Length: 131
Length: 182
Figure 1 (cartoon, each protein chain N blue to C red):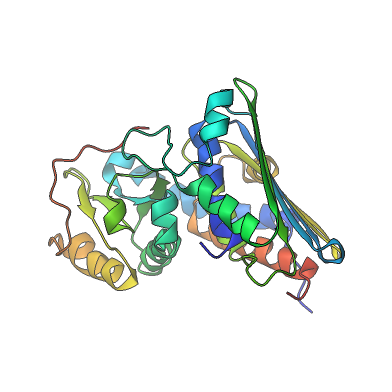
Figure 2: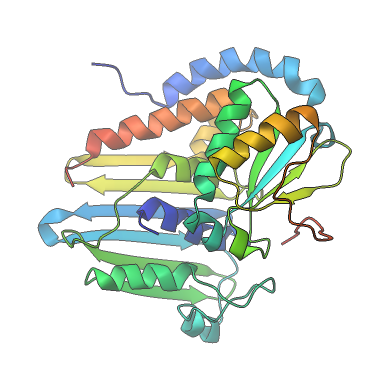
């Protein structure tokens, strides 16, 4: 039987990870990072925002793309959940609605990797929410 | 919402918005008493008696982005559907306590769901609120405290992919150990 992981194992992992982190640190300024905010209030959660967020985290990690993925409150587009706000470095944020896994994949393949906008942007003059 | 983990993810964000420094989440599974109890307690800014009274009203919210607030009403409905109960206490500038009881064996009781995913999302919240989670079943107890984890990590962010993966497995394995068949 495998041993159950505990905080003691975390200590070991920490040392491994620490050296990798140092390499990454130079790009750590949030302005240089791709930022994704997943709207996660009741409306978002009920529509599957948690799966969308996990998909972005796993897929971007898998493809080796550094991004800052955070949850945020309701953006007011409850009809179009799950909603995400994607900010490419140095660009204005774009809001995408109805982001399921297939849409998330399309956004990663086109917007994040090729800087091409994808269908489904919510066209509003939008400011990042500041709760 | 059909998972307890989703409700917790939803409700605990109220605490984060209320600037809580510590959010305690406690789950007790007591199948012999036909009880699944969930408690969420924070030390945030609390609510006035009027707000407490209105909190379970779907057409009341403290937000300005929209006119409805469904988080607590949905949870209350889910609890009451399983012959459970819903109690909300709050004191301004002290904090808020929520206790929700579900009928453990009731067919409409939400399943636990992906608690590890919920805890990781909450743990990496922007306002640095600490999360203390405890889960008790007849088979044992599991505790997860972000203060302890952060102490071990010594400045490495919880959102680092390797750390996230590790913590996800750690929570999952520990919860499996105390899981009772549903």
